[in-house]
Image (cartoon, rainbow, N blue to C red):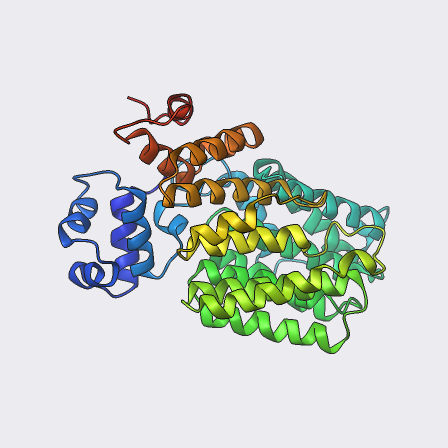
Length: 399
């Protein structure tokens, strides 16, 4: 069961070391509203109020609203599937390691293909399925490392990186950091010079989710400099460097330095234009998501999150998404466009974007807390926009 908004607000406020009065001053939201939310005398608030509270707390709006669940919950404890993921990432101390003989019949190429397919599952938000397949993939990669196969460390590093991403989506950021630190250790023993920087990008993202923004910037910039020092001569190197620049920009924006974030995103977008002109590997499914489309989508997100809805809509207008844009990025773009229209008071434009979102990702939209909040705000308008009833009934907020 997801945490009540009032409980989340109280927990985040205490983590920030703020009293209700101090949060009121930082967010310009009345103490009475904060008190009612925390005491559960009201279960929701208008989106501008929630956005102001999130800014006062120094967190993303989705952190306050609660991220959509990455997989079905099974009570208070971890599900058996999650326990299996934990055991694969963190084997018990003093437990016997994998027997090299167990690697007989396994091949690096086959395991790499399974890892690439698992990343595709991740980007399609098929987390339940991924939780079932990932433990075996990690275990097989460990067997290859024990047998001393060429490329085994890279395979294990990439599978542990995926474990870190999955853990973040499941709200287990401490497990994510452990998995990613182990991924870096494997990457450093591999022959792939881009693998460590790629994992560093994941670490920076996990730090962002923990609100460790200074650490996120430091890791992303260090890794970006490491890639650049090796030269940006291939599509892969540009993608990894660009992904790190985008990550650092996001943390700068979260820290309140929107101008620095915008400069970095513009530099990344300019570099993305070179990707199609450079040689690329045959299988780039495990390389950083970086293209003109991904940079523009992230610029839209930063603009709308930091109070520039007009810029967000200008950036999104007429955008053509590349074929390698993951479904999850497409859904976020539509949600950000809906939010920008809402911020500008354009209810009809918001409904149009939300209708597109329902066609693209209906299940995702139904449980996404921000989508539901936007629809609830539109539904409660005195003059309801055309089409909002169908959306409100779809997500369960209609009278």
